[in-house]
Image (cartoon, rainbow, N blue to C red; front, side, top):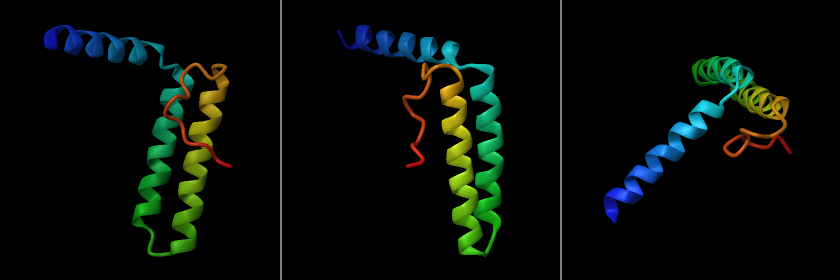
Length: 77
């Protein structure tokens, strides 16, 4: 039973990875870059702004594909 659950989880992960769009991948790279810049800045206001922009980039990319891959995308409300 445990092996069956592990196998099902692995298949689900592979299925989700296959669904990731090109826009999602590009947005993730851009968001990661913005988050790295945020972590490197000593300015707290700039750090918050960069993190907010990273979240916005990820949210917009998730919306490009009709919401098919937005399960783990943060909201920007």
